[in-house]
Amino acid sequence: MKKTCYPILLLSFLFTLSSCELLNDEPDGEYADYLVAKPLVMSKEEFATSVDVIAPQPIDESGKIYAYQDYIFINDKYKGVHVIDNSNPENPQKIAFIKIAGNVDISIKDDYLYADSIADLVVLDISDISNIVIVNRLLDVLPDNVVWPAADIFEWEGIDYENEVLVGWEVITERRRVEDMQARMVDFAEAANDSGGGTGQGGSLARFKIVDEYLYAVDSHNINVFDISRLEAPETLNPVFAGFDIETIFNKDNYLFLGSMRGMYIYDITTPAEPTFVSEFQHGTACDPVVVDDKYAYVTLRGGNFCGATESGLYIVDISTIENPQLEVMYPMDEPYGLGIKGDKLFICDGSSGLKVYNKSNVPDLPQLNHFENIVTFDVIPLDEHLLMVGDGMLYQYKYLENNIALISELQLN
Image (tube, rainbow, N blue to C red; front, side):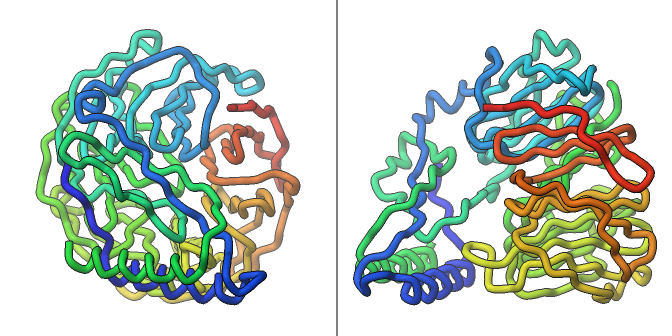
């Protein structure tokens, strides 16, 4: 596997941000705490046969959530997917774990599950959930599918790229000498400059999206397009360059809405094999998922650390003229991640500040209906009958009320 390099602008930003923050915060002028990303590797031989279905496992780091029929699929970052039987939302049951090295995203159509495994696309038949079968593996079709964690420094020295595959990162806090780390960051940046049941529903943090007979998978700067008219044998089409630091994808009608660290990009998929650029809404550098209704795009921006210096908040963007999106209003938030909409309700996962529920029927007015505090939230999926939310090793389910929601159940995942 060849070594993938960072875009230099991103690295320069990370270096400037990290060094400024740490110099201001260091307690003794010489040492400071750093987030250090350490590589998770496996041999190429092991990676080639790393997909497997095993008994339910404790979750290590809950990631994105996906709903399909009576099942919930929760990503365990870089490791695979937990399968939960949700036929009774009051008593969900973990039933299996699909091991997929380097996995962060899935999407499902008509009992075929598509999952990334670093640069590969894996296809599984889940028509018999008790006997999940691997039916295909497309090699190197997601060449820039790199998901970087929030960290101050990445330690990839010592990786044997001839015989090993980098499948993910473990981020830990270490106390190190400031002068040494600043020099290391500069060297790092310079090195990078040289080198059957229909479709399921993902959350706002998804990087995979199925629309009719096409799968769209965004990486850091491309829309990768696959024709899945033959579900078991996807056809790789030409990727579309879409900018830099692309993070999420959302579909509404004939448009794809891409959330990036630089803005929201809108693409027309009237010709589904060839997404075409329509317009963009720019903002300061920040982590950025987006969901859309008939008139507005709702964008949560999370500033600070890896995501940037932009103030965290909810940006409501008027898209009634799709070629010219305009900011309608911004509401401050603490550390927003995923969000979702259902009817007149807007749900925002505000990190450690909990789940916030709003009435969006009269934008720009946004009265708060409820605030579920003392929980850590990551992403939501508003289903037809109830709401799913994942965060901090927990799966929560809520029923809709006229002007509120109420807890149905919670499941400990780890």
